[in-house]
Amino acid sequence: VFLGAVYLRQGSSQMARDHFMQAKRMAPANPLTYLYVARTYVVEQKWSEADKEFEAALHMDPHFSAALAEMASGWSQRNQRDKAIARLQQYLAGSPKDARIHLTLGTLLGQAKQVEPAKKELEICIQIDPKGPEAYLQLGSVYQNSASLDAAVVQYEKALALQPKSATLYVLLGNLYLQLGNRDLGLKRYQQALSIDPNSAVAANNLAWAYTRDGGNLD
Image (tube, rainbow, N blue to C red; front, side):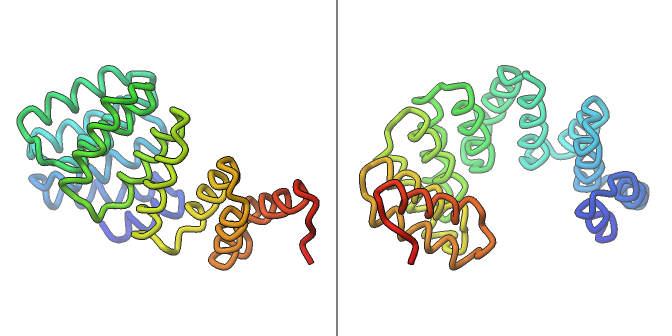
């Protein structure tokens, strides 16, 4: 499994699958090996093969939320979002405390522009797992996409408190603060992004644009 994971990170899905298949033969009752094999098929966009592996994992362990979440996300990528949402809702009817599935469902609902249902699912996820940054990030995205920028900032700042080394979050917040008219805090967030990732072209470009827009300079 370890070697398979290394090959998968390197982009060699076939080599990864060979190792994961060997692990599956050695431990045919372990649903995790089926999940790993499914991931190699997802990389190659061999969706039907991936779904078979996901379903096999879920047959062994109906509460294997990682397999369900990844399968539903794959359906959404294939324009089968309604199918994915229905499957997740069905699961949550019997397992209402699964934070990962609430997160996945909230994310898909947000992508479907179902703002209030999305917020509800993400807020439930946060109640169950308040230390998970992804739910705050997704909730911020829902607010941002519905033009509730102040509320989006609140959620992104909460995510940042849990991921203080995320240059991407600093850039997101810099963008929002500028849109809200808070130039100083926007510039500060871009500068903080660059302190974490000096090679961030997005942060550097946005910082330069923010200075020159208002007649300032970078000296």
